[in-house]
Structure formats: C-alpha cells, structure tokens
Length: 394
Image (tube, rainbow, N blue to C red; front, side, top):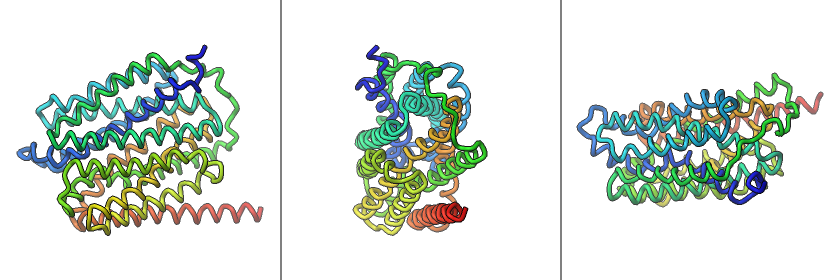
C-alpha cells in the first residue's frame, strides 16, 4: 500500500513535523523568562524557579527516556507516539491557564514525560523505516527540521512574549495538528521484516561505544544549553535586548544548526562518526568563546551562529552512530538511553552554571563552557589518533 511506503511525502513530512515537538519544549518559552520572573517576583527564589520551569522538562525527559525505551517494543511505536503527543498538547499549553508558579513547574514536568515519548518514538520509527545512507540523510533532514522549527517557534515565542509572557504557551497546541497527521500517515513497523542482521560490533566494544556516546551527549548539552537558559538574561545585561530580540537570536542560531544538519548526510559520506563530533565540538567551542567575549548584540549573534553549526552536526551524528552499532531489537532501548543523557545534560546545566555565574559572571561562564568543549575535542582527537597508531602497528 502506498501509505506504507516510508519514502512517501506524507510520511516524511509527518516524521519531520513530529521531530520539531522536541525543540519546542524549550525554545518557545525561553524568551519569556525575564517577564515571567517579574510576574512571580513575590515568590521565594523566583529567579531559580523560573529557570527551573524551563529546564525541569529535561529531568523528566531523562527519566521518561528510560521508561519509554523499555515500553516501546511492548506497546508499539505508533500507540506510544499518539499518547505522548496528546499529553504534550495538554501539558505544554497549561502554562497559559495556570496562576501558580509551582503548578506551572508541575505541568512542565509532565511535559517532559510527553517529550520523552515523542522523541524516542519518532527516532525509533525513523531507524526502523530507513537503513544505511538513507537513514543518515533522513536523520540530517530530521535535525534540520528541528532547527527550522526551533527558529520559527523561538521567533514566534519571542514576539508573543513581548505582548504577554503567557502567550507562548499556546504555541504548544500546534501538536494537535501533528497528532492528526500521526494517526493518519504513520504505520507500525513490522519488526520481523526489519533487518535482523546481528550487530557486527563486538559486544564489549559496542557497550564501550554506547557509553562514550552517552557521556559525550550529556557533557555537550551541559555546555550548549547555557544558550537557552542564560541568553535572554545575558543579552538584557549587555544590550538591554527585548524578549523579541532574544527570541530572534535563538532563532538565527537554530537556523544555522538546521543548515548544518541538512548537509550531515553528505558529510557522513566523507567522514567517520568521531571526526564529525570533533568538528562539531570545535565549532561550538568557538561560538561559546565569541559569546563570552562579546559586548554587543551583533557579536553575540555571530557566536550563536557558529555554535548552531556545531549543534546541527552533532545531534544527528549521535543518533545515527548509536543506531548503527546496536542490534535492531535493542534500538528503541538504546535511543531511549540517548534521550535520557541528552536531557539530563540540559537539566543539570543551570544547576551547575548558576553558582559559577554568581562567582564569575555570565560572560566568563560562557568562556569556561568553551574551554570545556575544546578540551573534549582535544581528548577525543588524541584517543582517535592513538587508536589509529596502535591499529597500524598491529
């Protein structure tokens, strides 16, 4: 049947639109944080709690990723995706109606569980539908769609936040349109027909590679998520930027990431997984350094563009690398683990950065993030070169 052809336009469009729901979780309300903090100024520790409202979904995505990774083979990809998207619409838009900061934080926690389901579900379906270079190309397209979606949602969120900090929460209702497409277009993969070729990577090496991927993903997100959590405050500090200007800056950064992601498939033909990660880490480090040294909106914007390029390359690379080294029957669980570590990094980012900011300030915190990313790149390069030299001697 035509509707069971994964190369059809409707199926591809549905998968790409569903993928944008992940980036919506944070990008939409990030420009609202300063105004939201002012609204709840009478609440104890409002500065911390408002940022928690942005990042707590990440904690529950991390928890949910472990659960979803186990459940996805039991209840099916499509049923999980439908249930998660419905929960996403309800909990994402709740902030428009709720008057308690703690109630908003609770709704955002439930949103995190929903995102865990949508992210793991759509990644698993993509790796079920596509194989080889076609998979690499589509994962690049997926990351590009997330980047373009993040650009649009961040811009719309920033513009609407200038009118009222609650308005961005209504953008989450876009997921109801996506829900209809999921129900109509997607089909449940028949796992018995998916290639059952055993993973060629030896089990011990596969476990080591998975551990490296998870660790890199978490540490990377700790540094990179400084942009989403702190940027609105940083731009307000150095140039008195409005919420709309902050949203536009994030949008341009995600646009750069989308452009880089769209070229991932072509780049993967020439480079291996670790080389792409090294390049992405260096790009993000340079971008963070420019942000930290910047004293104007324009300079910071240049840094955001460079960082966005790195982010656009590294995210599809993590997923594709992981899907390549694990056997088919463990793919959902492995991708659920990746979801957990990516969003665990997002959650702990403000927890680790806030004490540093209080001591050295925002600009130096971005610079320290740059140093961390650069050190990761150098370490990975040294390991890569050392491994190659050992292999030559053998």
